[in-house]
Image (cartoon, rainbow over all chains, first blue to last red; front, side, top):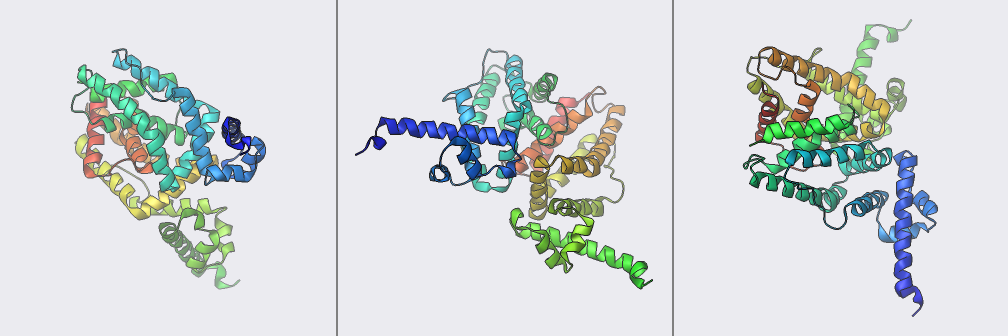
Length: 199
Length: 199
């Protein structure tokens, strides 16, 4: 047995994984998405192309992993939303952070690339839902259910619809570049949602 | 001068244009979008590839023309929304039609393809806004302003935001395939919007 199978091997594997994901994020931020290739990612990360293909089946899978890795870094293992008892303040905090994220050019390029892949690729869409969208939605719904128990939100409200009214305008405005992504806009989406689904 | 320059020429040009747009719609409905090529469109339409390139610079431009042609057929020259005086009924009529359109597989393929092109291509996005999104938004805002004058809608409401709350949830649910596209859903978007922006 060589030390390839020991803890040094695990550390090297994790280092190469991180290098690949960082190279992917850097390239997506710099280049038109169709020009980002698995070859270019491998060259930037200093690994062989096969090292990437052993782990991920396609460019879109690596791009998705690069995004997921960012959100795991940011949120830790379990995502929770602030719950200070003040629903309006908590939602504005969260929505301002989301608006800021979409307005960040590096994030913009990554999520724009992934959105176009997801629109065409039903398998990737399912993975996106399972690994990112659904855990995020579950965390948001936990906060909304707490607000329903506290009488701050209509107890009968359909929470999927509440989340759509809160987030879909931001998503569409970002995707179509149809308006400014500002703190005031984040706040107005919370105000609208609370008017629509207040008790 | 041959008759190539006379009215017979115009008629033939329009016939070939219609054949190209119909072939584009048929191919987009049948094939994965990346497999639809200008060559394949030309073959299906029974024209030369150069006939297409003389009129449109790229595949995405032909696909957009094919969509625009559908909406011009459906709506005539100027788009107007029903105005019976009953805002809720008028909006439900319009939203039910939109939901039905998004749920139609042929339209789905066309608009999904175009959405991915638009997300990447800022020039096509601008053309889409100018030729389709803005005229549609203007028609919808005319109906909303009439409701504001009639006291059915908050006179201070930001109409861009009203339209986002009405349409963005449908757009996102359709794009991410994250929920059913039903008449009840169309109605619930109108109900939510009227609660949020009522007088």
